Length: 196
Length: 390
Image (cartoon, rainbow over the protein chains, first blue to last red):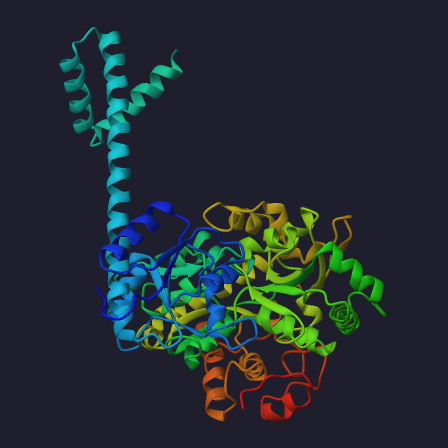
């Protein structure tokens, strides 16, 4: 729990799941004042209305360029903002970009205070991508399963084989042709559809 | 030539054409380069990924490359540009309401930027008097030619871009929606977004930016200076591939093929017909179907456009000074000019260029005295509206 009053953190992210994961992480770490902006229309006005100390934005978001305007001194900008990229700390900048997140500090917030916030964002963003990857992998594994089952059914019917025999045939064909069993299964389905 | 494929970032805009065609048509491969193009969603991403080494090179706003070298608004990373990806190519599009107001107040030719700027001055004054909200103009980035072109134009008509109107940054893909829903009254952006607004009937193209400046360096092929020094052969090969790609694009018989390459979903992903209009400099400027044609709309390679001209870097730096983004100093100007590297371009060609622009001061602005890079302070003093750092 930060000793001083918790800084106000605004998460700009169109993905509600990722924002929720990040928000939960920040709250668990004792940052109680966390808000989420999902709507990109009039982004600057929305940010000013919340008046945050720290802004966190994902790098898939084209609106990142809108935040750059806040570095400028002009009438449209109320409090100057700096991107949290310490020239002496290129490791953390790299980790941040690779994780797909960028952080901005508003006016005088001390750098020591934002470092743990940024580290947390990086680890939560990485956790989110890992989850996403696993989900994608599971999805494609399930898809492949379905395709193999359909192909097996076709082979069983056409050649009068048992399920195990059909599978062995698919697998040995895949090995002989140096292809994945899923690819062989897919070509069987395509062929069967063509010949219908 | 390198131990990994070159990763080059770009934003889906028509002025990335030389880069995209260089890779897609195999000009880079013919130079022994293996290139992976990475499409990005924001200039901040392109800049950051170039700066920290996730990209080896990038399609970048020319002023961002200069700002990186000067350490303005962000970390200081010396950057060089051996190739100029595009000259001009932007346009100013206004809402039907603002267009009607400007035309009602216009005294002169609608393609004359002085006439339209003065009309804007009168519209702004009238709105001010009536207590209306200030007009809002969208542009793509604080360090962008769009920002400077808009400011240069309106200031010539007596409109102070920081006091009399609002200038806001908008990502190009959001420009058209923002114009349609009244979030902005006008914008300055590159192709294809102006044409998209006209086709949807939500905007009129008021100016090609070549009306404002005959020759403005728009995007460059940007490379970190330290990387360029360590990989001179690669820079030479990459530049040569770009020169060849630019020549391919400029040949009229290749226009359809170029448009088809750019139209691919992994590249720009809009219809080839819209892209063709941009490449030909023949644009529908009004929802009623009126067309306008200009040979200076977008230059990719012709008239020596590919060869970086340090005078244009100096002009961009002068705009940073005029609008308070950069302090005025001979050292800073030198750094800015050194971003544009005609020597690297010439080294890649193995010869001095034959064709070059015949614009005397290298920029050809519609207002103010001829640009004088040897005395920026005196040049800027000729402009009434400015917000220089004290």
